[in-house]
Image 1 (cartoon, one colour):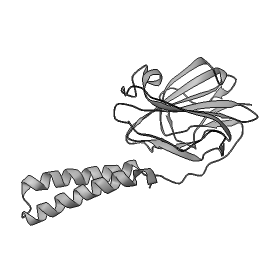
Image 2 (tube, rainbow, N blue to C red; image 1 turned 135 degrees about the vertical axis):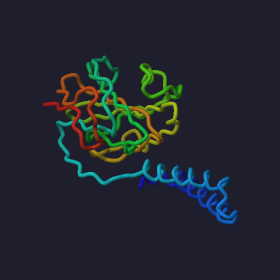
Image 3 (cartoon, one colour; image 1 turned 45 degrees about the horizontal axis):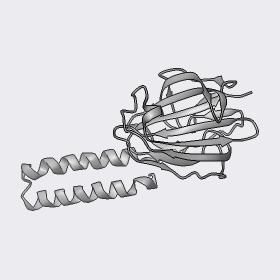
Image 4 (cartoon, one colour; image 1 turned 90 degrees about the vertical axis):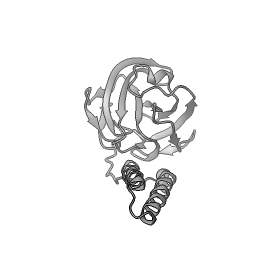
Length: 212
């Protein structure tokens, strides 16, 4: 279970216990039973959302791993200030995906930039540009990679533990986005893309691209 979800779980658990107790002392009144059942369903969803499964990361310095679980929704060439000539890969994270985010390559954190913005739906075409996000630049002796956690209409809480000059290992957990959103990964254009549009990916397991 992701520790970032403990407070959310505690709140929903407390609400469920209160409503269940009230229902019990009111003889199972339907007036209280329905909200009690709904809060129980919400508790189950919250527990499911903040799951944090162990994953066996296969480290490879030439691979760029997916930083999160989701579905690929965009692949396009871009010119990036940090990476240079690059390819942008965007993935959409539904509320049912695992939301733990992982580092795509090993290396040193060049910068961490939190940008305040809007909370448009994560699937909106310009969400990457206008929505609130946390952007990380990471580099090693082979490549530079930039990856972003992007808020959405429901996902308004971005958690990122990385700091400038941190040394990180491929597949390390580094944060999460609460309740669904999207992630962008900007990689060198010279890398060979190994995923396609609409393909599901898994954080720390799916290889997005390979740089030979």
